[in-house]
Length: 482
Image (tube, rainbow, N blue to C red; front, side, top):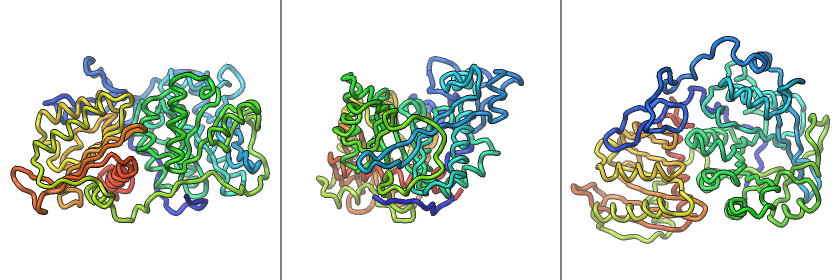
């Protein structure tokens, strides 16, 4: 882990180009765009006036929403800050920004955000709230190692940042220690955009927090893929004894043990709650026992132990191919395997991913690309899409497969990954990876492969990291020069 308080790169956080609409994954319809801004219902035709991929939502009629429109136009929201405490050392180490409306019927954040959602402006309101918190934190002059947690609503993942707010966002990237707080709901609704947001936050040397995984199977399943710096749990839920909450607690504890991510327990209202949080390994706590929401303080001491940021590879560091990761890590290897044999192995892994208790994220490197993909493999991908919260595909001409749950990146010829094939499934309870390279070092027709197979969670995570780093550098990625 490293304590990073100074921003070293000026990457622009969050995509401002709007949401790229999904594509159908039915066999025979590869590349047919399905323009909708929500997860597609294949039985429902696209309505007239649906948003076009890459554009803003359709304009709303003037005057729609009345009070909420005035609040958004005037930016008349206010932010309260609830302190996050290091209970081991008795210090404030950060704040969570909490939105309040102006005095009146929309003062409650529940009513405020519901009103914005009713007129299709939830994403815009969320941007305003987040940037208001940035501005106030910038002006407060607190120690630079004090962290700020900002929540991200699902709708703001598909909404471009209002242009007048961009200067503050860019200043915050340079000066603040921010954790982008992704909810399980946001991850479930727009997993590709959540992945992009997390990658962009990392490019800005910001942290990523995930919360509400007690409510979201997708949020829990993507813990090993997103590898958050902080996992947040609600004390009222983890102490309830409910099955999903217990599953989330165990997954969070395992993730924090494996990666050294911080565990933060919210809603700590009394000393019993604080002890339960400490028993789970959470020294970082937040709740009315420790302090109610209010304005930022004028002064704070420098934290002895700031909320940690995980160490991630430098983007300029060379990427390792899946085969090299698995072979160097001691994965089981077999030589001279036919394409049919490799396909049979991948089908077995796919079946395991499709029928398990917790659907995993899936990453695929396909040297053949989408254009020459056999119908059987198209059916396999369709099955995975129906089951898995996120599918990542890298290969020639695969961008036609992009959808709300598929991050597809076109791989240029001559890329280091180009000769290889790879298939990875990853969740808190399942890790499997198979990588192949041409037998003898040269592609053959029909293909013959040397393969490496592993069920080591650490190796599978490393392969997933390398694939995601590669996606970051390809067209549409965080570090792509275009």
